[in-house]
Length: 252
Ligand code: PGA
Image (cartoon, rainbow, N blue to C red; front, side):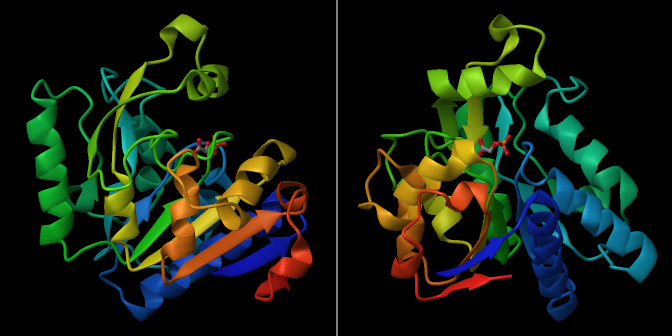
């Protein structure tokens, strides 16, 4: 695990975008796993800039998003489909057919989850998966105490996640209580993982994920077993870490 410690959100976003862009330049038909939420917004802005100013080419790129709310139509402003179009896809030259986001409106959820896994397999697997982390240590919508061996599935959101995400909705009641999410197993099958975290409210989750025992109570702790993880955190998110315990930690 490589850990980069950066001053602030802007530096985290720039460094993350550089890593994603390098992957794309090395393999122009890369399969990218993408995340939503506040954390990667700055990274997407940088990638859009690179596309416009440096011709970063998305024409052969395929994407798979980690998750989508259950029961929110695509045109709902809080759906992750809407988020992705708004933050990235509308501003780059990706082919619409290469974009994959779980369909939260599908009636047969089981079939949708199986279809999603099959699409990832058909694409040859995910080359680079971008992750944020929840205050409760979740990755994707894999909430604490779910099975590590799960593939894409329907999850019931934690109270903490619902409260955290209510900032995007008019009221707590409007936050969906379920979502379709890649499972931990799906995430662990990615060839490379890029985990981003900023802000002091993520510091404890980062400590438990990187230093704590590997256990389903802290879903992100499983990343300690992945062979190719890069973590970029800002100073605030690193506050709880024992920095001397991380020989591969670099200031950047
Ligand atoms: P955030 O969410 O980026 O909005 O903080 C991250 C997550 O919950 O995985």
